[in-house]
Length: 239
Ligand code: CA
Image (cartoon, rainbow, N blue to C red; front, side):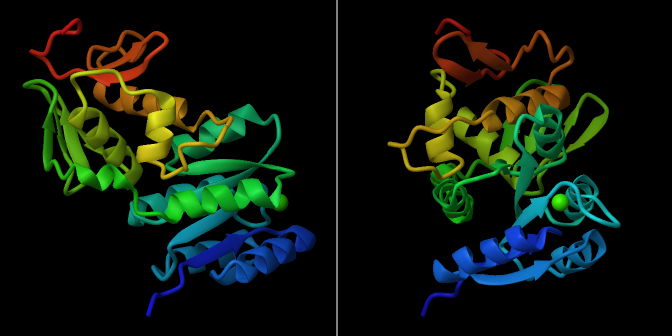
């Protein structure tokens, strides 16, 4: 017997909330919903959900604060932010606080389901079970405890960030494209056209943690036209 994935929806607009509940129940998910930020935060911290669908503008406590507080306690809970279209700052801010992905409102049911299914799929990034990634003497990542250090600075990571680093490290002999990362680390089907900045924003966030100069990365490189490559010290960029 399979257990239904449990999703918590935090959305104050009744019409959107009800619509989301209906669609997701119809597709076989177990759903709870909250209409305010404080109710949503309390439920989100209960530890009983697999995915949080989180609106940004909410009464009492906004979605960013909820995302931030949840991440401090729970690196595993998948979070999809519901953001207004064209609100780029919201998207970047949400992902920098540890959300896994975002959907812009108004969204189509198909787009939403695609992301929900992808985020809930335990990704094949788990094909790499690296415990430690050593980028240099000063920079190392503990993949089991979602922690690390950069010099004397202590770091913490979300599960998704670790999955991303593990995948890049397992393929460090070559660049990895955005599409491959969306497919392998985020769980999206490989044949879909997806317009999203999720990968780029996660990479930028990781650079701020791992690189001395994030604008001139030493380990997490952009290979023009090819994607991203993780390059531990001692490996040659042109190898
Ligand atoms: Ca709202």
